Amino acid sequence: MRRIPRGRAAMIAAAIALFSRTGHAAAPLTLEDALRIFRTSAFDLLIADAGIEGARADLVAAGALPNPSLSVSRGSSSTYDPSLCSGCSNHSLAAGVTDQAISDVVSGRRRLRQSVARAALEISTHSRADVERTLEFTVKQQLLDAEIATKALEFAQQARALASETFELTQKRYRAGAISEADVARADVQRLEAEQAVDSATQALNAAQTQLGFLLAMHELPDVSDDLIRTSDRIVIARDVLYRLALAQRPDLAAARAQIERARSSVELARRLRVPDFSPSLQYSQEGRGQSAIQPPTVTLGVGLPLPLFYRYRGEIAKAKSDLRAQEILRAKIEAQVNADVNASLAAFTAARSRAERMQSRLLPQAGRARDLVRLQYEKGAASLFEFLDAQRTYLTTQNEYLQSLSDYWTAVFQAEQAAGTELH
Image (cartoon, rainbow, N blue to C red; front, side, top):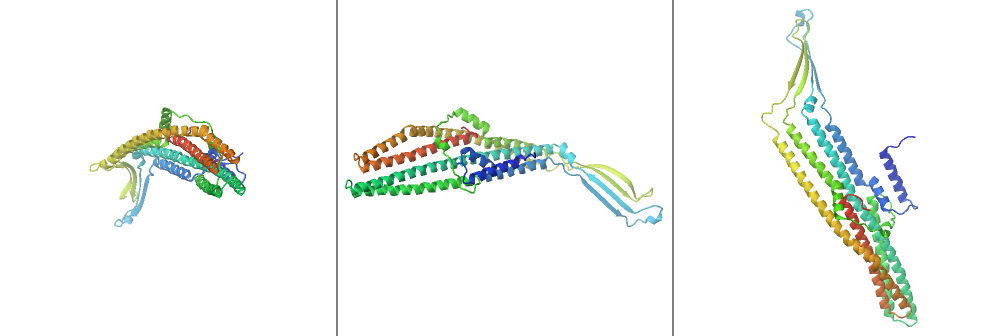
């Protein structure tokens, strides 16, 4: 069986995943599915992959040896008469070979160029990983927004159905003379507000799906699951663990370290420029032939090199040193940013987890129970329409706050993952 190359297999897998997501019978998109499609099909990652290939090509070029130079010439002497002697000739022939590869290897510049290019390739690889890290947060956030918008639309549709039932009930009671026309108007206002809420929730869902589809390079609006919303497990994050993970896993920090290695190699390469380039040469020359030749066959070995008397490459060395200093400061800045990201994400996570647990375990059930009790009382005439509408409005507000608390919680989790540079759930 013919083996499919790894790169082509990844493209086929991405195409199959893309086709399955755009089909009518496709399953809802989970977080795992979204990340898999993103890692194989996202435009920015494909561009970063091309950048890595370019850096790999630069590494090949850095290790290349200069080609030797060949010179050949042929001519004749105009003032020499070859007919004055037997077997004489006035034609000249010269050939020479000059090589600069030996100087490049002996001086160590080729090895240092390879070191600089190898560090640049490592930087490109880490930069690609950092692009993936930052964009994965955006993908997760957009998927979360789509899930929240889907749930908000469900809540809005439920509220619309209940508002319609309430409006019909108030009309019946109004015709029976049990309530005033003002109560009917209040119920109608709530019904219209529920219609408005459904339209707004539909628009928000469409916007979230559109943005998610763009990030995943999908041409259809993706349907999303409710895995994040239904997940009841709570993640425990310790600061020291999160900080150690960040120092070990953050690709931007790894890229900063590689930048320092590149700059150090560049400093050494600039210093090696002081070593003169010597060019060994081999030449052969002849003019005429025989014992009476103007120039008998002659082989000459030589070497040429510039004399480093006036310029000692101080500018190149100083520039390379300043680049090294800048990269060291940049690494310190990124380390400080890592510490700040860890602290900020941990603070947001702790507060969001507390709010989400309180909303899920106490506030939302209590608000639903209060709404149901007041509704039952209203249907039996023991509560006013105003009390029922107020209970319904409180319940809807609590539902929206619950969705917001879930959004804040998972956003904080994603921020912690972005700060650590690795998955935490």
